[in-house]
Image (cartoon, rainbow, N blue to C red):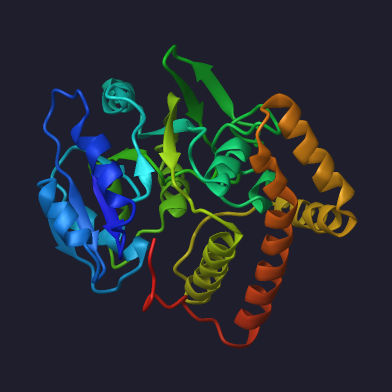
Length: 328
């Protein structure tokens, strides 16, 4: 398992506790790729007998690359420090599809929504994504209460009991690759591990090489995304700044289809009119009652404002989001 960290002391212990509590018979290597934490992240990692790898470039994408360079297992799991594995059998279920040699990777089909988690975390679990714009684009990759589906893309699927086998094609690849994504290490090595590993680019690149079969396992994963809208806005700004910065340098490869333009236009209209967003929130509440749905409208507004600012800023001076004061 590869876990990138940077001042993740507030969330890392529950993550590692859930990993060490797995009822898994095989060898388990836990690599912490740390970007120079000044809190108790390293002490927590050492308490759980993890191997700490230095990540001088600090970002999560650089941490994943640093960890993968020293990983030795046949299967690699990309776990974020704010993930919690829900249940002692999680790892066994996630690795089971790899008994089929045609399966390149596996991923949980949903985010686990726990009643006691903060509202923002529950909201993201309910809509099935950490960015509401992705719902309008249709390329989300976790079960969404709004649609009743794990993606809005037309994808060939086969039910295999404990998981759904998906056959992906170029131009129709969901944003898979993070928060519990597992992949054969030999396939990652085919892509070449440089200084950064952009998780949602990995699946598209593998599909381009003909490794297009993946498993959506019928389980979840907890993603402690944050406690409030201020955190949400900060993470959205990091997302858009980093995407524009690395795209300008030709380092990103995730493919966008024509539906991107239609989805963005629809998102803008919904935000301006407000009523369609409120209707979505009401529909979500009717299906899974939770006051976290109150965050839907402001989360969409913040996304629109932050993305507009980020794209305008990048037109003049693309820049990576600074990590100097970054904390989970």
